[in-house]
Image 1 (cartoon, rainbow, N blue to C red):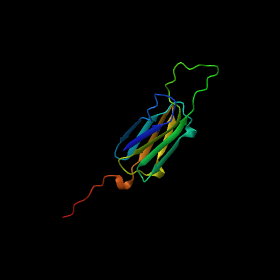
Image 2: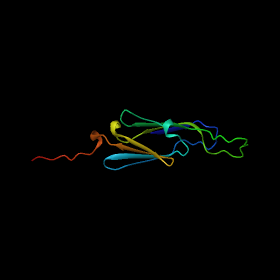
Image 3: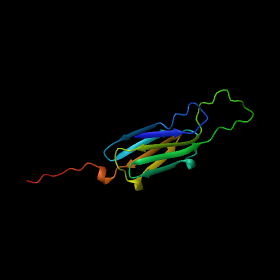
Length: 120
Protein backbone atom coordinates (compact mmCIF):
# COMPACT_ATOMS: atom_id res chain seq x y z
CA UNK A 1 0.00 0.00 0.00
CA UNK A 2 1.66 3.20 -1.18
CA UNK A 3 0.29 6.74 -1.36
CA UNK A 4 1.92 10.05 -2.16
CA UNK A 5 1.08 13.70 -2.46
CA UNK A 6 3.16 16.71 -3.41
CA UNK A 7 1.80 20.21 -3.20
CA UNK A 8 3.41 22.31 -5.87
CA UNK A 9 2.73 24.79 -8.62
CA UNK A 10 4.58 22.58 -11.09
CA UNK A 11 2.92 20.14 -13.45
CA UNK A 12 5.93 17.84 -12.95
CA UNK A 13 5.07 17.16 -9.29
CA UNK A 14 4.63 13.39 -9.19
CA UNK A 15 5.27 12.57 -5.55
CA UNK A 16 8.34 11.19 -3.89
CA UNK A 17 9.71 8.17 -5.76
CA UNK A 18 11.34 5.58 -3.51
CA UNK A 19 13.46 2.48 -3.80
CA UNK A 20 12.80 -0.08 -1.05
CA UNK A 21 14.67 -3.38 -0.68
CA UNK A 22 15.51 -5.85 2.07
CA UNK A 23 17.99 -8.45 3.21
CA UNK A 24 17.73 -10.89 6.12
CA UNK A 25 18.20 -8.22 8.80
CA UNK A 26 17.16 -4.84 7.37
CA UNK A 27 14.88 -2.89 5.07
CA UNK A 28 16.44 -0.06 3.09
CA UNK A 29 14.70 3.01 1.69
CA UNK A 30 16.25 5.50 -0.70
CA UNK A 31 14.68 8.73 -2.00
CA UNK A 32 16.18 11.46 -4.16
CA UNK A 33 15.35 14.90 -2.80
CA UNK A 34 17.89 17.41 -4.12
CA UNK A 35 17.76 20.98 -2.79
CA UNK A 36 15.97 19.97 0.42
CA UNK A 37 17.21 21.28 3.75
CA UNK A 38 17.64 18.16 5.92
CA UNK A 39 16.26 20.16 8.86
CA UNK A 40 12.86 20.20 7.10
CA UNK A 41 12.72 16.39 6.84
CA UNK A 42 10.32 14.65 9.22
CA UNK A 43 10.52 10.87 9.26
CA UNK A 44 8.21 8.79 11.43
CA UNK A 45 7.24 5.17 11.90
CA UNK A 46 3.81 4.11 13.18
CA UNK A 47 2.58 0.67 14.15
CA UNK A 48 6.01 -0.77 13.40
CA UNK A 49 5.63 -0.74 9.62
CA UNK A 50 4.01 2.50 8.40
CA UNK A 51 6.78 4.83 7.27
CA UNK A 52 6.00 8.51 6.70
CA UNK A 53 8.44 10.89 5.00
CA UNK A 54 7.63 14.60 5.00
CA UNK A 55 9.58 17.69 4.12
CA UNK A 56 9.74 20.81 2.05
CA UNK A 57 11.68 22.00 -0.94
CA UNK A 58 11.70 25.79 -1.10
CA UNK A 59 10.88 27.56 -4.35
CA UNK A 60 13.99 28.99 -5.99
CA UNK A 61 14.45 32.71 -5.52
CA UNK A 62 15.78 34.31 -8.66
CA UNK A 63 15.89 38.11 -8.67
CA UNK A 64 14.60 39.97 -11.71
CA UNK A 65 13.80 36.77 -13.61
CA UNK A 66 10.82 35.73 -15.67
CA UNK A 67 10.38 31.98 -15.63
CA UNK A 68 10.37 30.33 -19.06
CA UNK A 69 9.95 26.82 -17.65
CA UNK A 70 9.74 25.59 -14.07
CA UNK A 71 9.46 21.78 -13.84
CA UNK A 72 11.31 21.02 -10.59
CA UNK A 73 8.60 20.65 -7.95
CA UNK A 74 8.70 22.69 -4.77
CA UNK A 75 6.57 22.91 -1.68
CA UNK A 76 5.68 20.41 1.05
CA UNK A 77 5.76 16.71 0.26
CA UNK A 78 4.47 13.64 2.07
CA UNK A 79 4.95 9.98 1.30
CA UNK A 80 3.46 7.11 3.33
CA UNK A 81 4.61 3.54 2.71
CA UNK A 82 3.42 0.38 4.44
CA UNK A 83 6.53 -1.76 4.85
CA UNK A 84 6.30 -5.54 4.35
CA UNK A 85 7.61 -6.36 7.86
CA UNK A 86 7.76 -4.79 11.31
CA UNK A 87 10.90 -2.79 12.03
CA UNK A 88 12.66 -1.71 15.21
CA UNK A 89 11.90 2.05 15.30
CA UNK A 90 14.51 2.69 18.02
CA UNK A 91 17.35 1.58 15.74
CA UNK A 92 16.40 3.27 12.43
CA UNK A 93 19.24 5.24 10.83
CA UNK A 94 18.66 8.15 8.42
CA UNK A 95 21.33 9.84 6.31
CA UNK A 96 21.02 12.66 3.79
CA UNK A 97 23.95 13.03 1.41
CA UNK A 98 24.18 14.81 -1.94
CA UNK A 99 20.40 15.08 -2.21
CA UNK A 100 19.72 11.42 -1.44
CA UNK A 101 17.89 10.33 1.71
CA UNK A 102 18.89 6.81 2.82
CA UNK A 103 17.15 4.93 5.64
CA UNK A 104 18.31 1.70 7.22
CA UNK A 105 15.46 0.04 9.13
CA UNK A 106 16.41 -3.00 11.23
CA UNK A 107 13.76 -5.69 11.10
CA UNK A 108 12.00 -6.44 14.36
CA UNK A 109 13.17 -9.67 15.98
CA UNK A 110 9.58 -10.91 15.66
CA UNK A 111 9.76 -10.39 11.88
CA UNK A 112 13.00 -12.33 11.35
CA UNK A 113 12.80 -15.97 10.29
CA UNK A 114 13.56 -18.47 13.03
CA UNK A 115 14.89 -21.98 12.68
CA UNK A 116 12.72 -24.47 14.53
CA UNK A 117 14.42 -27.58 15.84
CA UNK A 118 12.35 -30.72 15.52
CA UNK A 119 12.67 -32.99 18.51
CA UNK A 120 12.18 -36.71 18.21
